[in-house]
Image (cartoon, rainbow, N blue to C red; front, top):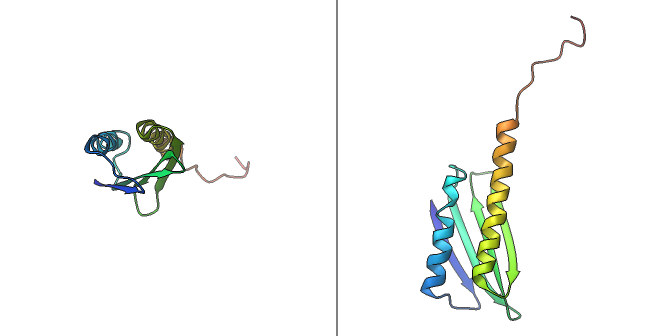
Length: 107
């Protein structure tokens, strides 16, 4: 899994980068198909903003945004949102059943 941590309009401390990376490392336990994760942290109008983009396959991408006073809280909320999206996607895949063609009531 490829992890990228980017910052805009701020300098992230080593502790903040490690915190984000440790949170992202837990994603494969929810879904095996995670290929890359990008965490974007920025300061905007005095507030912290975080965005997490998870690329699971060529066609499947999960994105979460959050804005708060504390960057750690932003990362936590984004990870909660992304894990919920992954859970719903897995449920959809698991519950998708192919039905036998209908006989049109001619039995």
